[in-house]
Image (cartoon, rainbow, N blue to C red):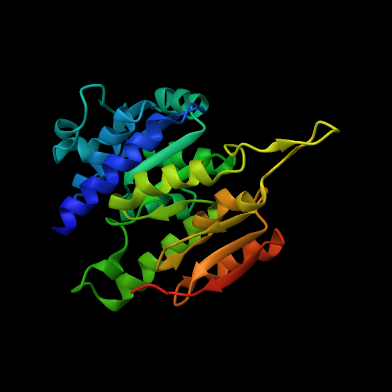
Length: 262
């Protein structure tokens, strides 16, 4: 069985899990002008639609010029260069997904230069503490074998800065999976028992979460900060300094579990 086929099976399972979720499912999708990870990023829009999400999808002018708009669902639109429409979108959405994030847009936001509609939308959302997920395929130069070391280091600093702003980074082909896992793991979605004083409590198992990733960032642990007491991490995983700091700040214990990651 090929890796691609396995990925598609996993996606199908996630869509079915997503379809059963009756909680609020609304998001704004922003596609910037990158090609790395674009195919997987387009599947994010398709899977969200199948999962029953209410989405609004926009592409930047650069993304439109390279044909991204042509591959997206019919409802997708080019992002108007008028900042008035960007401000309306920013007010209407509390969850922003960026299935394709370029280093240009990422760098602008890191420097807090919101001189394009896309940078404004993402930067404004972060400044208001809203949920922002982004794919790093197109802006992480460490993934480009021939890129100079200085470029790799610069992109790493940009990614680190945006993570400190609250961006939840992932790969394009893992964005939908991570989003659904975060929703399922959220204590707000868990069914708890009700004590005699009317206060909801989580079942004991819901207080222990497990994150299976090779590198765990601050964005990965954010969904678990309310109600979870312990996070289990496979031995060999890299926990970033910001993620570790966030767990300590919220008094959440993390422990190694047997098995590791192959």
